[in-house]
Image 1 (spheres, protein in one colour):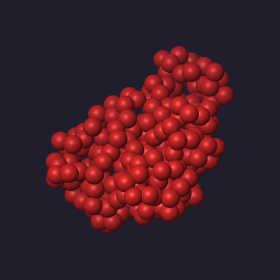
Image 2 (tube, helix red, strand yellow):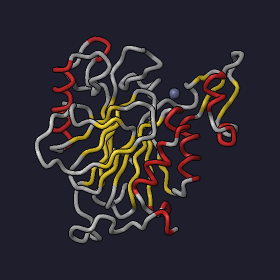
Image 3 (spheres, protein in one colour):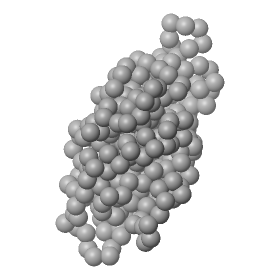
Image 4 (cartoon, helix red, strand yellow):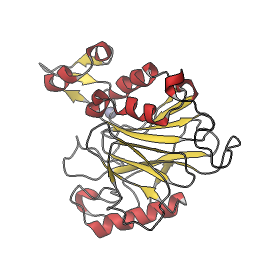
Amino acid sequence: MIDWIDATCELPDGVRAGYTTRLGGASEGAYLSANMATHVGDVDADVRENRRRLLQITGLADIRWLKQVHGSSVAKVEPHVDPVDEQGSASVADAQWTDSIGIGLAILSADCFPVVIADARGSIVGIAHCGWRGAVCGVLESLVAAMRCRSASLNAWMGPGICKRCYEVGPDVVARLDARISKNVLVAGPRRERWFLDLPGYLEILLQELGIERIFGSPSCTYQDENLYSYRRGKVTGRVATIVWRETPCTSDPPNQVFASCVPATTL
Ligand SMILES: [Zn+2]
């Protein structure tokens, strides 16, 4: 059985989120055992089996995966009209959102942060893949803009990623960060030309600047917790999946109305 950790923050009614760990899957070797990624060199049949078990444990019939590229593209997810091949249907994007019920939105990660966003009424959910590259190229801004909700109505939850004590970066990364933000989240390390980056702190500032007030985190550090995958700990490794979905309708759902509880950002 796939190990599943529910988000501990207060998500809106009818919205569920959580993440998998390394435990309970079929993969072997460096991918042991619940690797959810098809692009990391693992045996395809094992990943398919892991994803099948994930459907089982979440009770979902449909989970959407992305081809993640550390960019800022956002995919809108709607129910399939016809049965589609899982890989064939994956969009090249690093964020996705939906207002449909019963579709799981997945982000794969191993040190980067999955960031879940939902409006307070639970009528719309989104998720983004945020390493420092995604943060710098604006994936969170793009996702929030695509969801077209009033920012103050949004909740954000960051899943497992690498913590500020473990994420050492060099001048190449530091030079690319937004200095206005990074001055608050970079600490010089003991080694020359090395800093520790508080990536969740950086993301939190970005979310706050987008007007999101309710921001929650996960206590797990992927680098320290051996039950999670960490790209820093081993370059050949698997990925955990963080999933968000609308489980049940919310009271404000009128029939066939897409942006029931949201107003276009342009009217703010
Ligand atoms: Zn750590």
